[in-house]
Length: 519
Ligand code: BG6
Image 1 (spheres, rainbow, N blue to C red):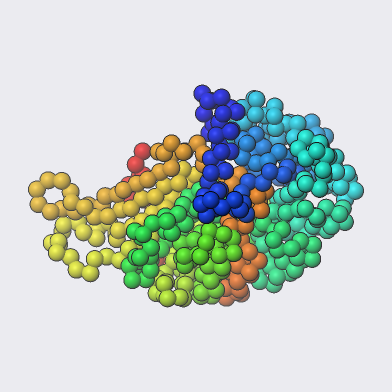
Image 2: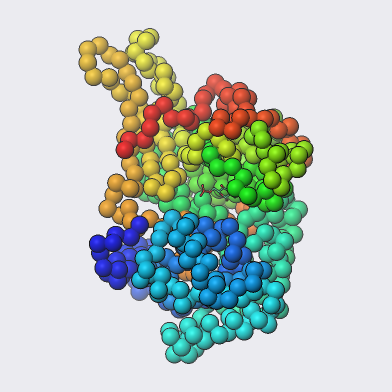
């Protein structure tokens, strides 16, 4: 949130300067070479496909607005396009309403006044020529303002916030309209729905765009807290030596949602929790936890290590999976009364390499569960022998844990047994906690989509997924997709079907937490 007491321009300048500093850190001292992640100065024209859709309303318009006015991104124009009939003015009204009602970060009146003229609209059904004309006009505007009229220096960023079938059509349109040059394209999940369709989709996209132009977005990797896993693991000497099968008993990646279907039946019915959440978000976050130290903080090195994790992932066995469906799902609008779609999934994943052999990774996510949380919990092995007498409390609250909370305020906590004050030797679980919210930089946290759109503008692939990574995840999903276990019903507001406890026994799910995060 912006601090209203500071003058806007100073805040913006300071932010841009901090970003510049953050991104030049990678330079060897004295080097004048610019890093590939250095902010781009050339202006950018963003074309937002699916501009009136749900994601655009909830996240993208707000994120683009903030990037456009904060000084973090170069000068930009945003053309919204969708099948709705709208004038530029109507689109601005639509965008303002979305930002005011749904945006995590509001724009001040002054910021909105600066952003509004940058927005325009073209109807997708007007065809490739209309799109090309709109792009040419806005590029000229940017070029006149920023590059002495040189349109060749204006970059193009296409955000395809549309389903996969529509995405291939959009790509065809861009090709026909001659808009592929100087461009980058952000693609939204799902990247296929199995190995075959993912291969076909990637082939199709590669006919028009080179891999280096494609940014497959997984917004979980844009979350500040997910990146903090990399910092935590690879910037400190403390934990990495014990980050392996000798010291870690098991890992939980637990993303329950209290939300229901939210009028998304058309998307959710053919998709379900595994394809919606696990193949994309949960496995991607798992790769950050499990990967070997990359040789550098650069896209190829990080993708290489993540892809090695995916290659070491054992095919998902149906016996290791619990699929659930909340009671009442089949009566939701747009849902088949005999639907077999899972709204919940819990599974045991096994990574068969030297670091992780024998360490189960338990993943869980689902709709209409008791709480909305996003945690990664690393359970360390218990001490081999205990000198503390029975009844002292040791082990009573599970093993010691390191927990990452992927909430926007990014929290980390280390819990351990310590002495309860007073006579004798009674032990209880204590914890050390950190939250970005408590730091002076709390205002600088970028929302996941803001961060990732900015990276795409700067051509930085570090936090995006690759075709190879996605394909290998679909390959590991074959046994489950071919022979899914039956869905079991669970009560809305619960933690899923009862069998989740057998899946993780003799351990237990960390959630619900035995105590809350400290205020
Ligand atoms: C989306 C899924 O990708 O992620 C949704 O399609 C899910 O079903 C959402 O609710 C969760 O994201 P976040 O950032 O709100 O935790």
